[in-house]
Image (tube, rainbow, N blue to C red; front, side):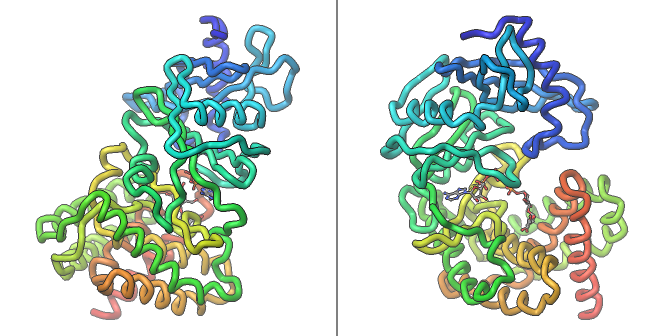
Length: 417
Ligand SMILES: Nc1ncnc2c1ncn2[C@@H]1O[C@H](COP(=O)(O)OP(=O)(O)O)[C@@H](O)[C@H]1O
Ligand SMILES: O=P(O)(O)O[C@H]1O[C@H](CO)[C@@H](O[C@H]2O[C@H](CO)[C@@H](O)[C@H](O)[C@H]2O)[C@H](O)[C@H]1O
């Protein structure tokens, strides 16, 4: 099945309004100038994959997105548009089409330039249901066996999530890689083992018994860092690395302050704090491949212990940047920042200090060394600055959470002289 030039134009026009209303559309708040349908692959069974280029006002290059589409004969209330008498819907909402995609992975098939590769056995599993809730991408769960994630914003190259799963191989703290879908330019989707009944750290935070589980979370993060170092290598952090690190952090501060005036007020003090922390940090701790965007939503308490998911790195950063070696303390700081976020949902914050202590103790014990406090502080500040930018763009009501944390860090530093 092919789409005529007229159908493509019609689809592109409908997407100008439809895309910005999707949770996973990353350029929220930035006006869309036009959408072009760059390529449509026919996967069979009335399932298409459209790759579309979104041109934003004032931005030089387009952003590419993936749209798995189903074509329906009946008018559907959730249809994106009608195309030559058929109705285009989001295929991730259509269980039959998702079962078809899983079967293509199991068969190691190729359809219209799209390659489906099984990395481990894939058997039929039903029902297929789309994961609801906040996501940067779109995932579909099959029975209690597999989870298939369609990457929404595409970048050229292998997605870091696939690169990491492949390199790690079977690892107790990471879901197993079962399959990959790509078009020769970008990774389109990944199939992983599904941990049925697992609950995210975000959903557990603040509930009774949570603090008692944080030591093992610290251990799981350190175990994963050790596995990443084994798979990709590691090197001791040098003074030059620390200097490059602070430059990157100051660069992020400047970019974020330009879009968030509430952060700009703290820019001078934050600059001093970041430079001071990176100067006080000791060389010698590891530099290696890390998760890059670890938070409590990315750790799952499963039957077999904690699992870390979503090794995509910082969403929005180009792929080569996301694979860059970094300090593992970026991930440690990510969890600490997330505990602070979680504390904001609870009337009393006292549990957070104990939770942080447990997490850090578990991490230090398994890693064989305690995190360097100065380097950890630099990463906590950098993550909070990142969050100010992320929340400003995506969830303005939440921006006070990282801003308040920044005010706390600044006040504590001033008190300490
Ligand atoms: N292997 C897995 N087992 C169980 N649940 C999972 C697994 N991977 C992801 N999930 C669930 O799917 C949600 C979204 O997955 P995630 O990889 O974080 O997507 P995104 O890249 O869109 O942020 C997670 O919050 C988690 O609830
Ligand atoms: O899960 P993603 O890879 O899409 O990560 C992005 O979205 C996260 C929010 O869903 C965001 O995390 C921030 O909010 C969390 C609470 O919702 C909190 O636990 C994290 O500490 C905080 O950073 C993440 O930063 C962003 O990259």
